[in-house]
Image (cartoon, rainbow, N blue to C red):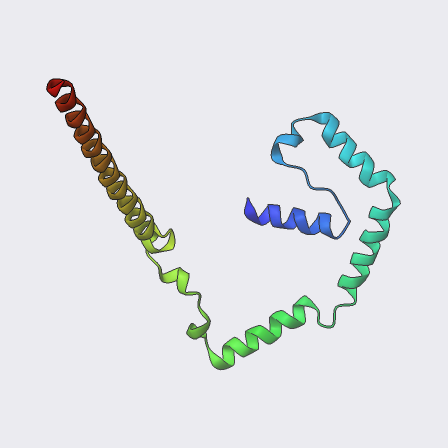
Length: 136
């Protein structure tokens, strides 16, 4: 899923692991190579220790942040003005289907008009050619 893809990118970016696509998990050589690389390359160990220390040294623990947020929520109630507008969209609005249909319809009309113009031009040139042949 997109969430796990994002997490894998973060792990790779922080240098504490490697990202594998789902298809690569079926190949035992690729999986074995990734595990071996992580276990033998000391940079992964250093980066993991550094990341663990960074998490441990956070200015606020997750528990403190959670408690402060819950106290704020209890005091002020839900802040509807911070709700994401996309949550209220219909499926048509969310996926921009109205725009897709409008653009597709306009492109179809333009293509049909161009086809009609080309057909008229060809018929016109054919009539000119036939009339020249008949006159000769």
